[in-house]
Amino acid sequence: MNKDKLEFVSAIITNNEGNILLLKRRNDLVLDAGKYDLCSGHMKECEVPMQTIYREMYEELGIKQEEIKKLQKIADIPTPHKKLKGTICHMYHVEIDLTQKEINQRLKKVKEPEIESAQYIENIGMLRKIQKYTNLMRTEHTDEQDRIFEIMQEKQNKKEEIRVYKEQGKESKLCQEER
Image 1 (cartoon, rainbow, N blue to C red):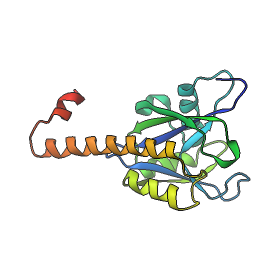
Image 2: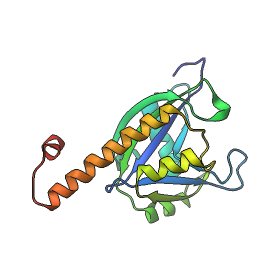
Image 3: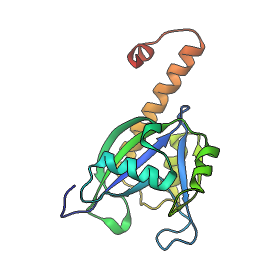
């Protein structure tokens, strides 16, 4: 972590089907009450981005490191939060195998909860529209975020193609790449 600048992490969390987890912040918070968000937070001085992702997922959602099926860095982008211009956000894709109900049950056990509820949405296009055309999320729209959305859409498309090929009993290049 750069000691001169704040750094943040943010995770686009998906389940096996590629649905994206959207988090609703509590209405009684001082910062961005009632807004929708991704799992995110600031890095502590002694942390590297991956450690922060693990910590934030546990603190905010009660998800333990060993429950994460896949963790992949997507990109480093300027933090899109209006109040934090000039800081860096390390974006990750995280895959978990938990239902919406299981996550919401865990939220009740979090010590200092900021998240009121969690909801899976079906595709990255919906998340993109929510972020780009409304003020629901805590950030303003940026070109860097467009790149992140495009990367996530490509991942989702690959996953869907593999699923269809497997259902049809066919093997594709993508299926071979997965192995």
